[in-house]
Length: 199
Picture 1 (cartoon, rainbow, N blue to C red):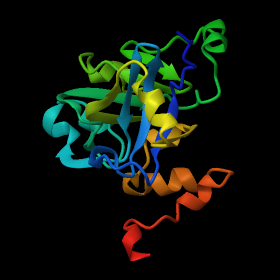
Picture 2: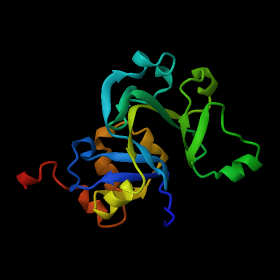
Picture 3: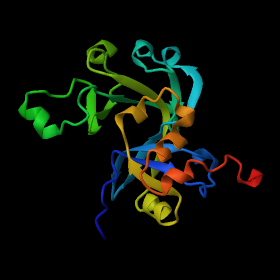
Picture 4: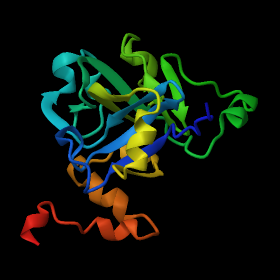
């Protein structure tokens, strides 16, 4: 079996050809990607449910909008916390450890400044360290080789993530914003109409 090049920390941006309604215009942050499969969260699906309504103590730490996001169609009854540690965007794990800066308790780094938050930990343990926090109900998951097959079929664009993607204050516009910042023909895809039949 050929080795899978990890896409952890990258964004999957749904192409206009992707017809699955769960992922229409979705921007997915990949939290894990290897030969055993992939796991990510949809960054641009806010719900009307406030974080404080379901997770006591975490509401004050959630960035605007302070709502739960639908992270994907899998395990909608589970919650994942994704956060950014400010000032850490360009710091490699090795450099941080050499300088004595370990990750805060209850935070597991995924890529760059982005990591997963242990929602079982007391929120006050992380309050001082976190720059922004998003809570996701459910996640997007792919079995071994499934994502690679979808990439081959042209369902997703793969682009670099930026720490601000996790905490975008206008998540509904994230699909267009991520495409617009690309330095390639992908920037033109941002102008694709919501309903191509109206073209």
